[in-house]
Length: 81
Image 1 (cartoon, rainbow, N blue to C red):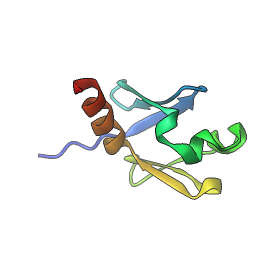
Image 2: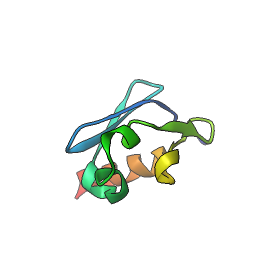
Image 3: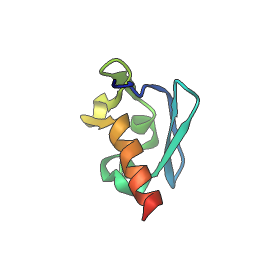
């Protein structure tokens, strides 16, 4: 059985990208992992939409997409190291 990991909201600061999930967990990953987002103006990073039934995030003006599941996997790998 596969459980979809869906996003509820996105926020960020100068160090981290934070995604709140529908189950109220919070994934925080370093902005440095996403150079396109890190180098973009705040207005463009704030302009996101959820895609793929809430399992991904897209920044249309940046033509950049991110899988929430891949964020979670990267975060778990970094914490295990």
